[in-house]
Amino acid sequence: MSSNTYRSIYRSGLFAGQSVVVTGGGSGIGRCTAHELAHLGAALALVGRKIEKLQAVQAEIAVAAPGTRVSIHSCDIRDEPGVRQMIADVLAAHGRIDGLVNNAGGQYPQAVRDITLKGWDAVVRNNLHGGFLVSREAYTQWMEAHGGAIVNIIADMWMGMPTMAHSGAARAGMLSFTETAACEWGHAGVRVNAVAPGFVASSGFDTYGPEMKAKFRSLMKTAPLQRYGTEAEVSSAIVYLLSEGAAYITGSFIRVDGGVPNARQTWKLEEHSRSVPYEGFPLARMPDCLKPGAQ
Image 1 (cartoon, helix red, strand yellow):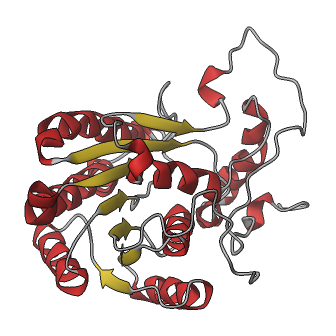
Image 2 (tube, one colour; image 1 turned 90 degrees about the horizontal axis):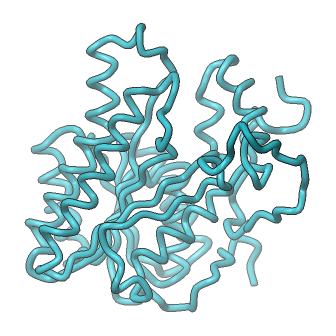
């Protein structure tokens, strides 16, 4: 087995003959999920704003899962005509869309009192409007007639998101959209679910400023499992919800967060190292800000 081979828990060929769209497929959780789906036989349409990142992942998959059909599509998911054309291009390239992973998103830290309307709008459009647009176009252009599965990536926003109110509001909106679309689109054989990652060690951590990076280094102590999650642990949940094993699950969500929302001030968490992470993605790398000695 090659050192680049994904160590998935799922059976080989699970998605053979299927085509899956992954937005935000050029980095982080999207990149990891694309690799796992390729390993399981899916054809892929990777979507993102930066074509160079998509090309890099396409090249990685060519080595890790030779023969996988991977198309790449540069698209700003906040742009309605652009999204409509992107889905049409995916169908032209693959002839079908069996699954959609709405992973693209982003935010920046800011106290509520300091968030401008422009900043608020940018984050909400990225994390809520974009997921809606891609879902709607995938549904109307293909899934309404043929069925399919949609997985929306939200976040650990259950008790608010101090310093990221814009993102929390958008993610909560995306959960409500997930529940509503599951009801309205069930008749078409379309399932809509969500995955809510908590503190997951991802390359995106290194894009934040020094103050936020310092916070990242202490956050794992707030989780009952006392560690960060891995991208592969999130991907595993996404792949399950896309799979036939989740055929009777819709309008639901899976938390992948180490139990953070369950921690209470009335209970002192014990420090430990007994939770062993699932490291299925061989190309995953620890963010620089979490490495020993990082400042």
